Length: 375
Image 1 (tube, rainbow, N blue to C red):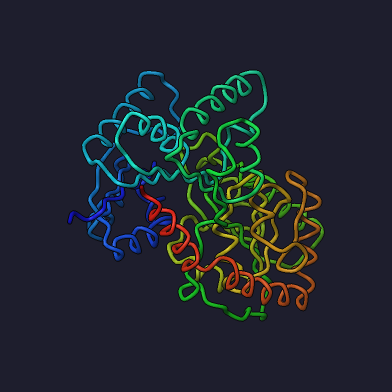
Image 2 (cartoon, one colour):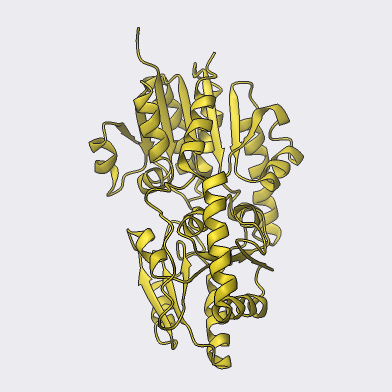
């Protein structure tokens, strides 16, 4: 009997490795032949080295040319016809949209669409943005509203939005809280309390992550004379229209007490050397960084927006502030910088939350259960 085949379609190879690798490994251990389709990238060799079959597809994350987007859709349709997977798992926006549409015209038995946040489409303002939103809503309806499609959402706000758009039916949806954390890799580590507290912003360097507000809050805290060290950890992402630039980074490097560390492979070590983790994002699916920080026993500050608020227990594992509110963000940072007892207490509660709700084993089990629903 032939092994069942699963095909992951993800925009970037690095995103597959950072957010879906444990699930793919578990599927492989369960006997699936695992195929992965992404655009070209440096980490494709890592995917192949792990025993997965890689397929390169043309995908532009920020492109809007009708011809190039149609080319991506056709390429995914051709790939589905060639690979003939039993299950196709679509991750990130364009694979979800184009893979969902293409799967309607193939013999794929089961489609799993992971909607990990609804992106800048539902954040941008203006007439042009409204036109794009209407087009996007239509594409989501076409891509997702199918009997063979299960839609994984990371927070209840995104689920309600897709229901309101008529893009999904309630029985199609499953709520899985994020991508999980490997609790053996992200271990509870007592804070280092000697020296100035270290406050870390950790995310891709996107302004939609609240990067400008964080920098402004640092400047405000400096003016107040708050004793702390601030750092920005993450890489630029030129495939995203809200990415910071090298010019931005050079400007931030001259701000007192602020360091820009760039991409760091060992995030557990980053959290070990931090006392507080901050993510003032505008909207998320469910931020992996907040889960990993909590697993390491670090209090967090994030925004009271979909996804972010679902990753913490407010006033227990961290603090919520209003999005784009620099003063409120600065006040929250100052409170937890100065109140060591509260900060440490929140970090301990964060580890407990990670163990109860966000362990990678739970996330894997939920995904494998969905894969097994193939008719």
